[in-house]
Length: 290
Image 1 (cartoon, rainbow, N blue to C red):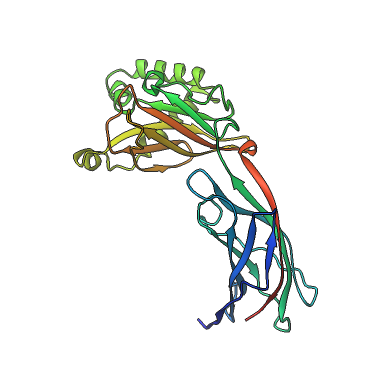
Image 2: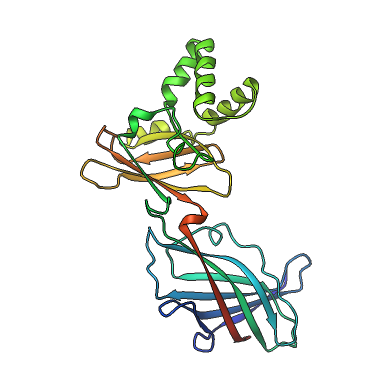
């Protein structure tokens, strides 16, 4: 495969935009890649830096979309597919934009315009949902009042697998109750298939985790209506976060904790939804190609 990568060029000073009096987006770097290989797209990658706003675990950003990009020949440049990580909210100041490469005759990208999303979850805007003594609410949707489109249900995995093995009818009765309390759609057969997938999709490392002192919580999740469960955080009685990692798929969220959950523990559920996200326009001008 013949691949030509043109060296990155630091710019930064020629392209800057102010969203407001305090917020600025700077261009730090541009990299151009061209290839003669079929089915491999030529591209330019812009590395930008956000300044002037708070960024941490409670204040995160991502590029939502590029609304317009064109070179100095008047050709439109399409935004290319983002990586998994670039499509997620994060607290890094660096944001990456990948566009199809301009024609070789072009000397600069005339304009890049788009939207940045600024995610600031709080209890007031519904992005942070706090549940005290959440162990008392197992098998019930912890988001039923705040975000009924979503489901986050703490499941007693070991107890119900044991029930399934010993008493199939009691297990089915539990599933029907769970279905009703969590507004789960589908037939009985679909319900059985759903929770078969739920229990079979765990990581398989439970024994190793427990040997090393890691405690596990399992949640059934449902995401729809443009809302997403961004994170689940658990705090002990002293107010210290005891998260130790997680894994998830479309229906299951496995949370690993460094301490055993006690009645005094508190859970914070971070929800991505429109009320907790601010859209900010940006515009970069006169980006010279390397």
